[in-house]
Length: 92
Image (cartoon, rainbow, N blue to C red; front, top):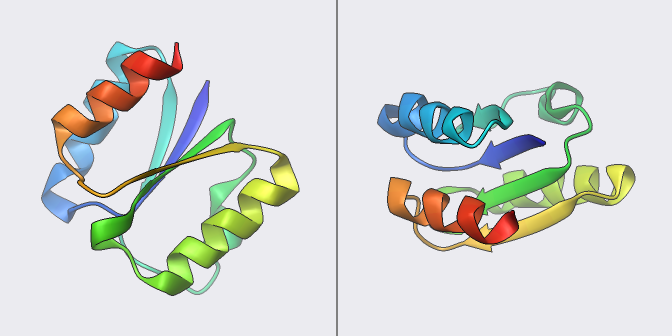
């Protein structure tokens, strides 16, 4: 499964990738808004939005891309590794 994580902390990016790799998922992590963010996201199966650490503009961009690709959107207030692990456990 391919996943795009939007939000979170810069220092946690490597941990997010490691956790997703343990569940055999491909992942892209975006912690900051870039000019062509919607083109970088691709067409993943799922978007995970860490809503506490992300701007409204990034959320809108991710939700719009999710609608285009018919992907699942999961919103989580905390951006901890435990929260990501819990999300991936419940998705299986």
